[in-house]
Length: 162
View 1 (spheres, rainbow, N blue to C red):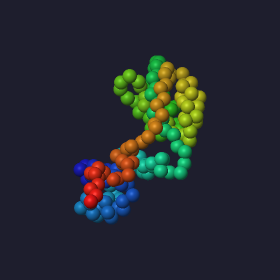
View 2: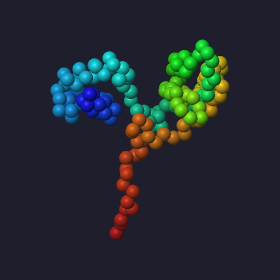
View 3: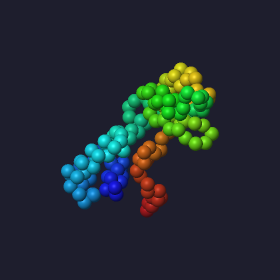
View 4: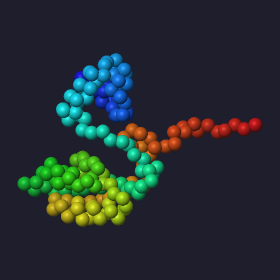
């Protein structure tokens, strides 16, 4: 179990590492690492591998918004059914049932603010159980999935010149 946790930590920090590199860090061999990865994938602990993209550095328009949803449940409809309905949209990059003043936190992505706004108003808001949406557009991302998007120059000392 500890090996699986250590393997997950290594994959979270860099999923592009070779199995040989991971095996070296775990003090294991590549065959064992591949077997653990297969096991974690079949258990559903690993659901996929994705890049962390700094869209401000990419030459492409990209807009992301965090949408708060409140829903009203009835006897036949639960959170799972609503979540399944919302999760099917490709514009939805993440969806979470949360505690607090609203029920769902939805990350929506599109090519423009208009695209995202139209998606929320035409696809999410009309769902009968949805009683309220609040959209927050992400203006700047400083850190995503543990990766800081700064320039990496953390030296804030003043330059000394003669």
